[in-house]
Image (tube, each protein chain N blue to C red):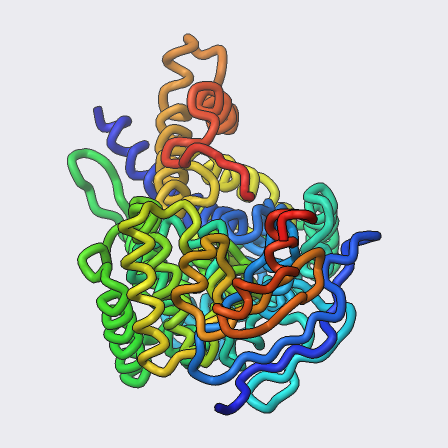
Length: 307
Length: 255
């Protein structure tokens, strides 16, 4: 029972990070019908930029949580600029090209960013200083650290904010209108280019946040961390129904929990043949099963072709 | 009466097809101007050229004394021309109220920071947008459906919603592309009341319509397009009696 609870806590933490990243995929898909495969790399850049800021401020004597907050904000702003640039350089010129073309540039951008990060930060794994309190509480036999609580809280607040932004504000309305019909939205005075740029920037900021949280959680950051994380988050977005914000959140959390529980129990289930390092298998196994039975994802609507 | 819109020598080709040829027409302020013609005569093409959805190949358009730039639909909207579509194009998954609120984008400031941090100015503007949208829904007679998804509205109500959304952009000229298409007699009659009311409230209306009876009863002046060319522009009684119009609709020999 305590294994179950412990893995549930770990899974929720991981899942809320997946959800933050998945939102970036799903927002861009919702508005452009494009899978931004460079998004995982944005997350990685966010984590490494934050790490650089932390190192820079380490000797400043500022309180540690404040350093963490500054690093987070700088990373988010850097990633917003990055997301804006990616859209401008790699996607906007191909807006009316066949769908395969921006997919290829997305993969291209992803490789460029990874190599760039490798040149700047090297191939080694960097230890991320633990700036946030690491005390843990025992709840019903499961350990939950303050860091995990902070991750859950930050993720929940951010997602609530995003939902309010999309459903309650003028920017959100413009985003939804552009997603439904860019031409008509344009006719109503909505500047689609601006809305699309904003979407990339918001998604990238969420990605940066996720990158900082995940590197704080595992205490590690490296140039290749965006790949698997991006793939998992993309899986989560598809699982929930890509293009659907609630779906990305549900898919992310669900995927994290399934993975953690899978890792916790796989040894027992297979009599010790498979170990917890097979946890990645679960993510993709779940994806396949869901897509076989619900091709549009858990919360996705039936796909209808745009006229 | 002052001239609101003057189109001069408009031409539009699609490959080898000359969809519009040397079309010139003048719309005066405060009138309902009808544009009719047989299927494929180029009515909707003219509409799309006028509203910037298609770039024109030839000709000039002057609107409210200013030359109308090519292309760029949102600039046409800002200049004061709003339109509805023959095949309704609402934001299906947004509520009726939200659809109209999007229409207010043309006339309100875009302030991203305000949207995120919800400044006082932004909240005030948002409240004004919402109030205006509610008024417009009331004006077209669907205030009670404000919070329903656009896709769940009846066909007639969707047409009204499209008009409300177009009105939200504060147009000087409202262009309606076959608003009565697919409507039953009752719906058409109440649409007619609505359009006449728009004119009485000072709006200029350009009406494309198949329903000749509706056009003749409602419009102050009518132009007829046939094979991409304007064959006549006059008051309804004269247009109805013109042999070229009868020929265009019924074929040679009928006149």
